[in-house]
Length: 208
Image 1 (tube, one colour):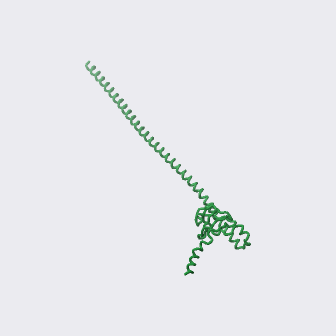
Image 2 (cartoon, rainbow, N blue to C red):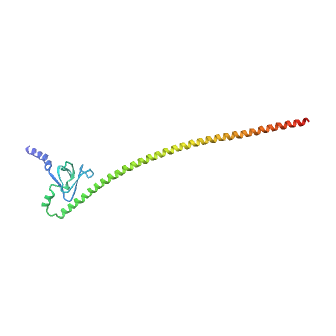
Image 3 (tube, helix red, strand yellow):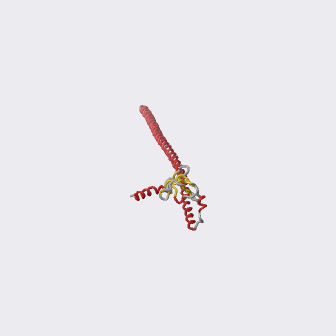
């Protein structure tokens, strides 16, 4: 029974061992402090080689650490060590080829992280350009609508002018018709008068 209790106490206390201790960013590399345990999470701080942080907890391949100013985030485990740069240089044995290869591998893995940071910067710039394009499209749409309104007003004005022109042409036709009718009636009247006078003259001559 006591053995079981001691085992359970050990399991509960073991994860807490080492928490709160100081960790250091490894030499010749920078560490990205992120908001979560993924390369897609936002970068909070770029930790310089040899910079000291405090261990909060472990989570998978990441350490949750806190910087001296209180910023807390996630860092890949292989980028941190429990030895400062000074202590590591004092006790570090000559590197074997395998260790050199591993360090080179770590450096190569660090490069994509820098590329990710560059991509994030480019994405922000592209987002600003997209916002500017949307504003420009809005201005163009407003200008197009204004041009359509002006065209509609002009078409309505042309229609009114055409209606007025047709009305004027109709009035001119009526005037011409009345003028022609007046001339015709005048001619008929004159012809009738001349015919009447001719008949009277013939009657006078016939009496003699």
